[in-house]
Length: 167
Image (cartoon, rainbow, N blue to C red; front, side, top):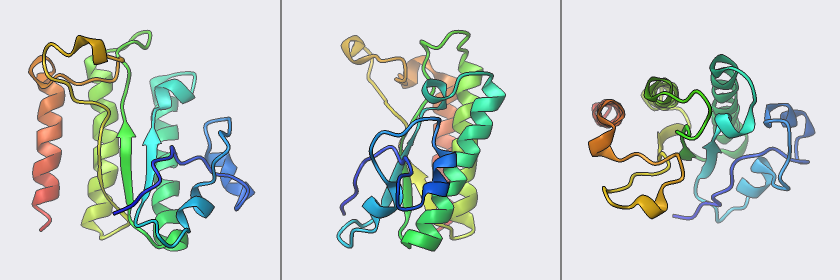
């Protein structure tokens, strides 16, 4: 299976879609890049704490719009499945709490689950990043160390069971 691994920014193939970008462009084009016949599925990343200034509510609103627009375009325009291949909330963000990160994870997971349940374009995702204890050199603020983040680990486990129940 082949995917591009870009963040999902919209470009010139549909300039009106740029309204969903987080205020800047990075020289990519989600639609045209993923229309390449040899690409098997589309991917996006989601880091609203890096991309959007303001409140947690504003970031969650952006997140939902970002994911929904890509689910819609993956299914209706590109006609390929979507994976959210990186997402997270940084512990290095001012005012960070684990509860805030958990709310963010639930928002992403709920959108994935609802799409999968309705046989939509998005049925899965990969958060950034899981580490084992002692891997301190790899910490970037987005890491999850399961033994140190039991409430987040529980959310991840619950999502796995929910998706598995759809078989």
